[in-house]
Image (cartoon, rainbow, N blue to C red; front, side, top):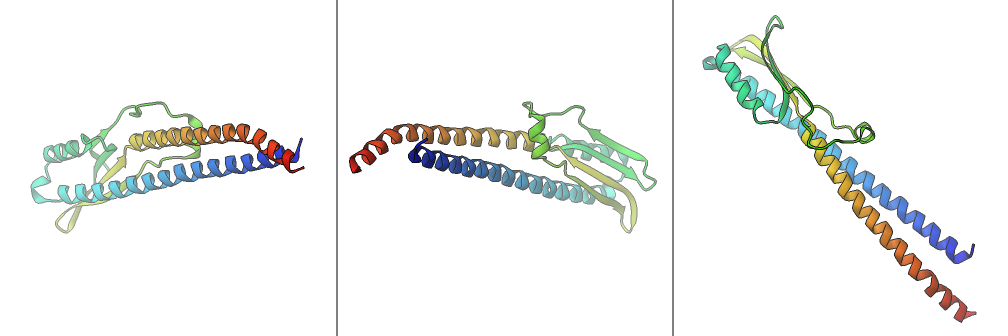
Length: 183
């Protein structure tokens, strides 16, 4: 193998490594951002829900069920549970099956997991604690977005790699001609 081909192969491998690293960092940054946003959203929602349920006018079970149903029906949460001080369940809302729109490969979910964010807050009646509310975020939308981002970025990286390969194929004869003229 000529020195020219060795040089072009080594440069191509370096570019491939750089593109793969950029792809991984891009998707991992997006995963970290989505995990953080899910946790912040869940913390905010559980605090707001606990404060709402703590109002004197919202102490009966029917009103609590309606408030929890309204929050659950937004589609942002997979589970909301209200328990009393003895840990008896008062209200439960939860999704049955996975709600993702497209199947995500197991290797992807294992390597770049989206955490099911959870939050807990106390419900009180003035100074007295009357229960606890638990919320778990529905991470399927975030998971779908991360997968779609990975696929789109992967296509761009493959496209850039193919363009580089075509460029190298046309560059080799040109460089050979120039090097032969110099001899």
